[in-house]
Image 1 (tube, rainbow, N blue to C red):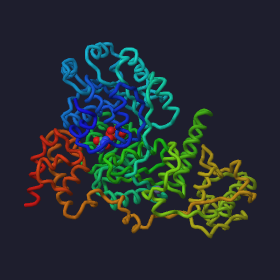
Image 2 (image 1 turned 90 degrees about the horizontal axis):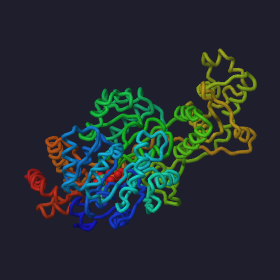
Image 3 (image 1 turned 45 degrees about the horizontal axis):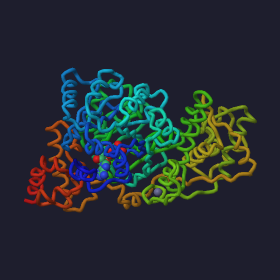
Image 4 (image 1 turned 90 degrees about the vertical axis):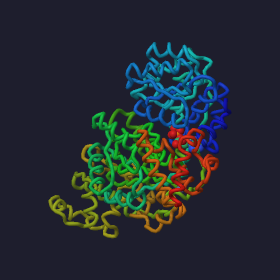
Length: 605
Ligand code: ADP
Ligand code: ZN
């Protein structure tokens, strides 16, 4: 049997553990229970895969993501790990084969859908084998009301009674202490040690930009920063998903839609294409992405505001799992605030309060003049980190300015419409009044006779929208759920009376192009290679693509981008030297070593 670090080198071909991995693995290998909280992309899988390899018996992994089990098993088999799965997609014969392998002790890892454990036949099967560890992936499923898998996950509390001697490790990327406590109690993990890894994902560059023409902005972002790279574009509604996907295709960018309204076959095909093809974009609602462990997602773009910081962090966390530079980009505007404020008014009192709390945190992140990462980490309980240098606000610090007078102008317009005319209007009309525009709607309502008419010509239309958005974000103004009309809040009066200063963020409509280009982190991954290595990297990518296609597996199952980059840069001349590259383990060296050296030799010749 290997030690954990021997398994890390020999099987996975990695140099060193990532933060947290070693302690967790050591604890589980010695039989301890663990509750692991790590951000998406932090490296949770190794935390149970290595104990499964190092301890005698089979590691049983409970995962709700049955659509991804085949890929997970393929990736392990490519490493020479003996893995199999049991779920409802298999026919009798396939299941029989896996069960026989399990009983014969010929498996290192067995993936199980949670509902399998409620079938008596499965527990009988497991009782006949030797189990090294139980891993409960996506453990937050047990804590979320209304979660599809919750009933199955609740039944997992029985594992302790049936297998008291087998260590259990529950893993999640969901951070709140309440979720943690509930996982612990529901799964009977009160003896478990808690491991909370750092939430930082330093290779992700965060950027939140004012939304003006979202489609054009998205296109420019993709073309200048991520040409031909894989990524996810999140939209709020199914119809905008469809529209944006079509728009990208019309502009020559490979993209497919994904949302719950598509039939299961189409969804599965689009997901499989995303995993297998290089450079494909998925435009999706939040229905897409859970458990997707594609390591080379180079960007996650949000065209609509996520509902919470948790959601934002989980979605953006899908970028850059391989540790290479990746971008989390979001376009955010007034309509997002209006729409979310309206949605937050739905449901019962407790629900509303929760929504508002989540929304306020999300808006604070969008409107901050400080480092985004500091704010994110602070939100997840990691206080006091240093400004990161790899987010938009660090690189182009926005100014804040005293917006008290413009704020008073907006609020007093809303107040006058209400008091003098018994009317309520949306942002468009309020801004037209401030700018003194004699539109048909202004004349129809006689708004040109209001004393505030034309008092706001010092700012332009977009700037006024920015002011209104920030007032909404600061809760100094509100929107009515039904018609989106602006109304005052309790706090508005303090501003109108001049008792409160309003600090606003100066809009920088587009960060200066030079600034973005100067930031190495935002460069396409291939472009960061030394000049002579770039064509070699492309040859290796082509070889990898062909090999993956032949085997019907995603390209990253053969080698990650990071591994190909290192090979291209170091240009090893022997198998022994190739074996020292990060990500080249024993099995892959034996299987692909000669071919890789051949690609390098061809390239030189
Ligand atoms: P999570 O499940 O936490 O989202 P994964 O387990 O999928 O993350 O790991 C993310 C990526 O990081 C994977 O591609 C994995 O191969 C890689 N990885 C994990 N641990 C290491 C390590 N110690 N060294 C190098 N790469 C690692
Ligand atoms: Zn920063």
